[in-house]
Image (cartoon, rainbow, N blue to C red):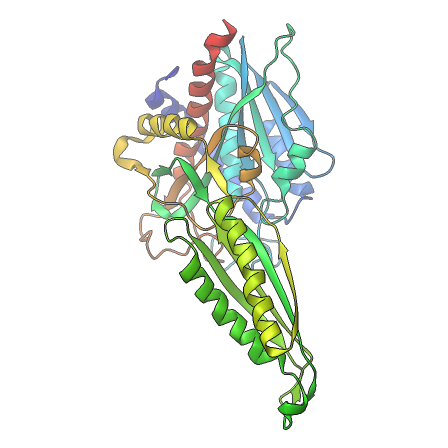
Length: 412
């Protein structure tokens, strides 16, 4: 470690009060999607006075802020996402959301505040940096592909150092807060960390008619029901349990009243997988199963698989180093070598397709609550322990310093 982890954590604790204030401001005024004008201005105000080269993205409200160290070296990317969710908050917090029907229920307000805190902490260690740190303040994580948009706009195309030496992005790191771990605990793993997420839309078409004469119609409803059951059977009987997938039907709609057989029935759901191999296999299997069932009953069917976020895959070597850093920051008794992926999804996956890196989970369950039963991320009652943000700030900073120190030899 280029800087003592205990000292970094103490410095992060000194930054906790302004970090909490920033987090609460963001929490009170949440915004959705890729256009976050209020959030962007709040973040820019928090970064004011720091020695950062700031680029405001044009296709979104993304912010790229570059900190250049005293010595030449590569660039490490640190990310915090900024958008909220369409939920009506019911936490009872004194800084509850003032935006009707919008809430920071996934902790992105804490991610953004911690990243701003890490920028301030690393700026204080600028003389020790052999390279640069790129702070990625990202909108649109909640289904709006914000990371992909920032990449397409040239996020990774960082300019050469002042002496003309290239400084490519050689590592990338993100934290994600969770109420499923005790406060200050950290969790990571090699390989697949989070699943892909694809939207499934199936339209079954039959022939409408009177409910009293089903033989003169072609009822799509029982056909759709059969498809739902068959898709669950397909998952359990054809997908390797050690390379899993989840297919959940969340919505079935058909008909207008009780005595009419409708012409169409609609099925909507989600497909999750933790490898591209299984993801493709499920896509193919869905079409095979529903087209076969439709044909057996004389119906027609249209299947749309709307590809969402890819699998979030941590680089093995980077994950190992991150876990080592976490041991130093939080203590080995608070670091979990995560045994398996989670089936949630993240657009951080787009960054990890381009740069070796990792995501790590940061626990923030309030002391009076049990992580096993506390309201989870995406609940309108979720509450995070703000004290955990000191660990987050220190971890961001320590990972950046560790990576740049490891890479510096190539620039000496």
